[in-house]
Image (cartoon, rainbow, N blue to C red; front, side, top):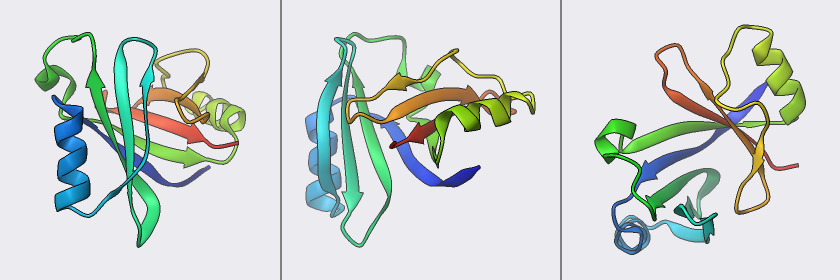
Length: 128
């Protein structure tokens, strides 16, 4: 069911500073930047030589607790080919999802969060 690691999400206390670090110092490229609702600003970064895995930088516009509570690395995301099939497949195996339905991200992809065995936050992403 899982095709690849999609992205790693990192909580950023200053999005501009983090984008500058990853682009100017680490050599990443900015793919997209936007706001999800009025609560979070997000940026996706990629490496030119390997665009298969991205970094997602997230900054809460309305703080929602300490970043240390949520972890600086917030979640691990996986690409799935068919979101509905993946949800059904994993629910049948006892996986607990954070929401009942997927949502649409800032770049038009479908996403849904789920929990790993240690309550680690995971995400499925479908670009179709």
